[in-house]
Image (tube, rainbow, N blue to C red; front, side):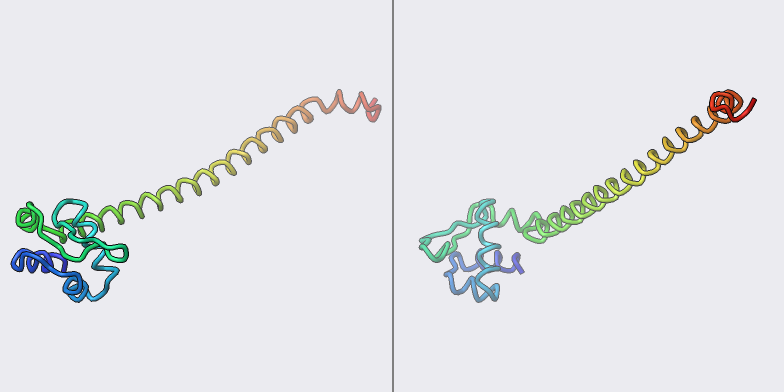
Length: 138
């Protein structure tokens, strides 16, 4: 859709605000797409007002090269790839945190079992001396 808009702009030369809004179907989507294109220098806003970012849109210098190199379709694809990578990074971060919790719990159990085993071994090994100390065995 965005590439069709750029082709229309290239063929017509200048597009008025209402024509742009009608092309995209909503003012919000039109403003978002046009702002991105303006930031990368593909289009130029003319006659901005307080309520509207532009009255006219004029093609920039690199519009035909931009279209030949993939245009907005390429940008949208790269954006989708970045979103997928970001989601996977978030998932990896969550799984790593959960894994660390399990490892910490397992480490605490191992330390407790080791301490219990040490004390039990010490008591069993020295049971005769402990019983004599407590005067329970002669």
